[in-house]
Length: 267
Image 1 (cartoon, helix red, strand yellow):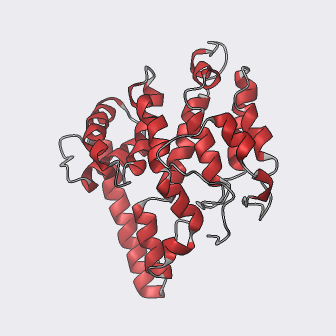
Image 2 (image 1 turned 60 degrees about the vertical axis):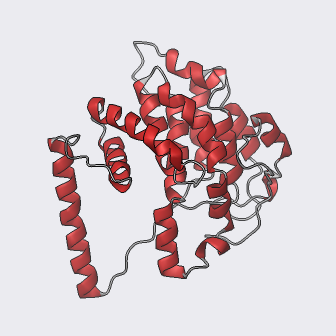
């Protein structure tokens, strides 16, 4: 958690800026990254390379750019403009083409679009209501007021959601599922809660078709939090995973009670 001031402003938080305007109009060099204050100078070039027409270059650039602002579940100053940029390029032809350009002789890799959605999803969960509640328990009710970067990210959830939402109906199942998992924490924003009914429908589809453990857990947790009975949607693996998690939680609670450990912070 940092207290420094972000160097980007968005007067209309529900509007997604054009990606080039973000690259040109952000004072990247002044922004804090995991490397410290004023270390974002390499970000614009790294982000621009994500749009390379060469899928190999794009994939490498995606990894390089996003790792520069990813560390220990923390929202940094640079996270906010990078998240806006990532959201703004989700429908860019170079990003969309990566899924369709696979060679049967090349081992499968995660398409750039899915990787971008996963990064947005991870940050949205790192700034969700549960993380805020946990922060307030540890640092007091002023936690979010002091954590400007997380607050700014949360304010921009409608803009990010506007780019993720169309991908819920993408032709590719991996993209649809990644979009859904990203949309779930974004939809906690007060102006987006009406979309939760729609997301439940997509969640039922995912649970009927996907075996991905992480995605199933996220979707099941969301449906339960929204008051839906998921017993008819859970398979044997879901039940086993839930019981395993319950046992681990009971063990952790026992250790904390015995040794005085506190709950882990997510950032």
